[in-house]
Image 1: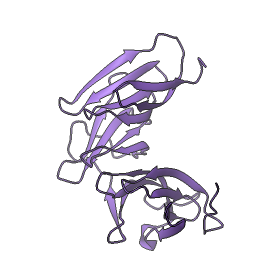
Image 2 (image 1 turned 60 degrees about the vertical axis):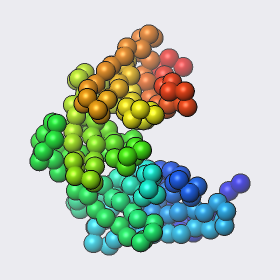
Image 3 (image 1 turned 45 degrees about the horizontal axis):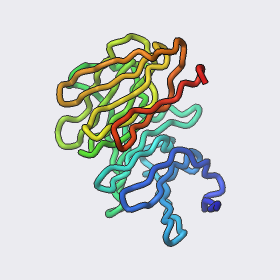
Image 4 (image 1 turned 90 degrees about the vertical axis):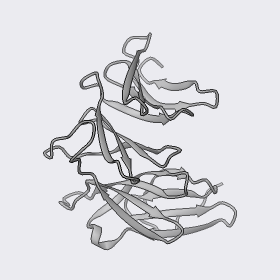
Length: 222
């Protein structure tokens, strides 16, 4: 079945499903965050605040409390700030901006490098996790007080991508350039890395099943 998005210039992109079963997606051209109710077969469109500038939502993820989080990308030729995470509360219909500035935390970043979130997720505690491949880092963002924290992945220039969380709260990701799978334990702030048996496998997206097994694709190894 197909459902036509109300905005003709939408360019729907990233997608997620909230705990109530509603489907949320980003409209990169329409500059909207949109919800589809499968039961009512109805859309609700929420336009990003105009004072956020010439930016649009990019990656979306839903949290355990129903909040929808998203990264943003500026439009071509735009110099508006895109160095923040967006949060949307479906109950109040309100947006909130969270700047990605890092004045404290495990590892500080240089202000000369813009944090560009990739492969966003929200864990069971409502903490947002994302990868920043250009910095070789894993980031967490916690609104309960910890704020933004950056963690440098042990293997340099590994180009992390794909992100998943297991039932114990560990964060998993692929290291595309180094043929490894990475694991981060938030309880001990510790990384573990695991070599992939097949050389030059080029690991990509990753997922964890109900039994706790980690699955990933090897794009070059087929």
